[in-house]
Structures are given as structure tokens and as C-alpha cells.
Image (tube, rainbow, N blue to C red; front, top):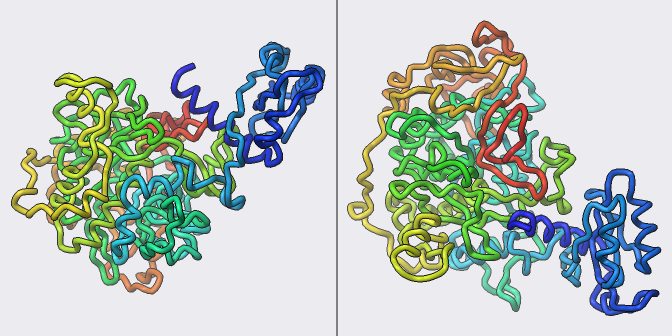
Length: 594
């Protein structure tokens, strides 16, 4: 069984023990009616065969435990010398050992044990040094993190934490859908960056006396990496995940121009998104837009991508050497998982962060939530693995540093992050070759804010990057990398945006350099509809010079077709494997997230 199979089996076992409750260490040592020690197992049956397989367990002298309908199975105890026989019975898909003998949740409402689960935020924030930053008073207060994604639904843990920016997605004509995450990706990322339950104030403020005997804080509530940071929600992905590169570029440009509007302080931009661009970063318009955000004072944190077994370089825009590219590490083994892209020797990831079986907030009823193959749900949480999760974790950590160093440049913060990371050993052994491979896969290593807090901020002069600046004069078509939105089966291709307006990369690059591509709610000649603040008022903040109450998608055309829906046909969001539901690095139309 490969690594992925082992992880899936472990996840199934965890689900079983969370539900079994009464099947603990004592019952594991009991004798069955046919003799021999009982073996706790998780049994998965073929569709419609659960009852028959339960009867097989009884006939073999075993006992049926808690039903697990989400995996078409149940927990059981079976004589150890009859397990193989059970596995050979007709209708049995698999019999997996359930070796975790204590309930996984010490807080039943959470659905997991944050003091022992390597994917919990309690573990991740401890491992990466976020808790050390909290104790020092750095919680992300006063820092806004822009999230360009599929929207954010204000589920518990995010209520009051989100400021809705423009909705540039195909959902925007619907008032009920504006800024809301009907897909389930953006909310998950937002929760990792800055989620916080209402009763988590003490720990979130860095209360060192709130740590328990094991050193973990806030084990009864959900706390994101930067619990006092605010999320600025810029929605570009629709209910089915669909978005075009032109929408993402428009979102990045909006963030740049509104980063310091009254009451706003956007210091970090999270891009858990990527394409396999067919052009160099020097020409790519998406990479150029991200780089311009960086040059206007925003730390751009971008996912390396999840096509690690096939892609030779980082995803776009992470492959731009100026911005902060984030890869993945499995905290249970401290190695780089095979799905993570690691780039080339000329452009590796900058750092890695936990990215396997990460627990974030789910959106009940969303696209991901309702996938029949999604077995990663745990109460109000969802498990996910991918460079998207790692990117969100790093965005939260950078927000903590941005609070500590309010005048630091993006180059200075990147230098601090890279210079204090902990090396990761993916290949055992010593010598130049092993060192080369480890650096290649993990870049500078696991981001380590504990070391970062103890290290002086590099000077602006010493931190200044020297990579060749991007020019952005390439093509949208190459930037899409085979990822297309469709209208009635017709792909949006060529040098045009979703409204069918011609797109000149060179002209747009000139506007982006001066942060002027948006003008009174118009971008590339179109007025974009669906904003929650088209009346020029946004929550308690007054916005001037912006009007998003323009045309609707149905009034726009591409390739002679009138827009009325969205479907993907290629790869996109550098998101996650959802423990049985693959949906990241995605293939749209005929595939799911990778």
C-alpha cells in the first residue's frame, strides 16, 4: 500500500474511533465467543451489502459496533485469527485495523483532539511558532489579509472576522450569492489564516497562563494562525469553483488599489491558486500582477501547486521569484509529500508548511461538502491536504510578523521568513547530493516563527531582491495553462476577459505599474457587477470613487456566445485532497479537485 493509501486508512480509523466511544482499551483485550483476542477493525462494505457483512461478522464470532454510513461500513471487533477470513467474504471491500484505542475527541463538539492531531490548528500553530508570537503579543491585530478565492461564508469561527470586498465571480448577479462561498475552498483558507471562535479571546491575546500542561493553547476552541487579523474577501471563484485568469488578475489589481483605503490595512495577499502557465514569469500577466502587488507593499503568498508528480516547475504565479512561494510538508513524517510541487533548482519553493490532513472550517451544503466521496468531514470541520493549506498557514504567520514590523517591506519579511526556516530532510543521508535534494524539495525548510521572533529584521538594503523584474507583456491564453471556463461548451480562450473585451497585456501592465487599472469601478473597459458595496458603502466604512453596479454576465459574450453559466475544463486552484475527495490542482468539467 502506498503513502496515500496508508493515510486514507488512518483517516478511516480515526473516524471510527470518534464514533465508537464505548470500544476502548478494555474491550480490545476481551475474548470473543470463538476465542482469541479481539481485533478492533473498520469494515467497509459494497453498496447495499452492509447488513450481510454485519451477519458475516457475527458468524465469525465478532461483534458489530457503531455504524459508519459515510463510508458504507461499521466498526467491529473480530477474533484476530478470523480477520483475513472476513476480508475474503463477498461484499467486503476492506477490513482495516482500528488501532487508536481512545476517542479522538476530548471536546466532542470539535470532533478531534487538538492536542494530539497533527492536522489541528493547535498543533500547527505550536509547530510553526504562531503560539510563541501570540505569547509575545503578536496576534495579527490591525493587519488585513486579502483572500482571492471562492468567497467566504461567515460560519462560526469567522463571524465578524471578514470584510467583503468585490465579488468578481460568475455568482455575482445573484444577491444571495454575493461574496458567499458556495464551493467550500475560500472559507477553509480563511479559517486557517484568521479564524477564531468567540470564546477564544484569552489565548488569542497571547495569554501564556492559558497553556495547558502539554503546552497546547486553546484546546476547547478553534483558533487560526493570526486570530486577530481580518480577512478581506475578494471572491473570484463561483459555486462550481470556476474562474478565469482575467478575474484573478482583476482581483489582485483591486487589492493593490484599495489596500490602504480608510480603515483598511492590507499587508498580505493569499493566493491558494495556480495554473501551469505556458510562458516564463517574465512575460506572464498573472505573475506580473502578483509581482506588482509585492512592489506596492503587499506580501504575496502563493501556492506551489499540487502536480508534484508531473509538473517540473512551480505553479503560476508562485514561479515568479519575487513573491513568497509555499510548498508542503507532512508534519507526521516531516517530509515533503509527493503531491507537492517543488520547482526547479533555479526556482524552488521558499518555505514549506503543514499541508496534510489539516482541519479547517467547512461550509455545510457547499459543493465540496456534498461530494459523495468526501469522507473528511468531522463535525463542523473538514480535513484537507494540499499546498493551499500550507499557503494559508504561511499567510497567517506573515500577518503576525506584519503586526510586529508595521513598516517592514515585503522583501524584509520574506528575508526573515526564509532566513529562519528549519531545514526539512526528505532524503536521508549526508553529503552534497542529499543536501541538494532536500533543499530542492523543501526550499529553506519549515517556516519557524519562533526563530523569526528571536532574529532581528534584516535591513532593507540587505533584503532587497535582485531577480529580473517581470514585464507582463505575454498572453492570457498562455497564463491559463489549459484552464478554461466554458459557456454552453465553448471555452473562453484567447486575449479576452470574461466580458469578451480584448485584453492587452502590455497596456494592462502599464496601468498596474501605477496602480491605476481600476477606474471608478471599471476594469479593462467593463463595469463589474455583484459587489456588496455598490452603494459606495461597505460595512461601517465609506468607499469613494467606486461603483460595481454595472453590467450582468448575461449581457456579455465571448466567442459569439451569451454567458449563462460556468464550468471548468482544466486545472486550477492549488487546493486540497479532502481525504477521499480529490479537488485540488483541479481538472474541471470531467475531473474534480486534484
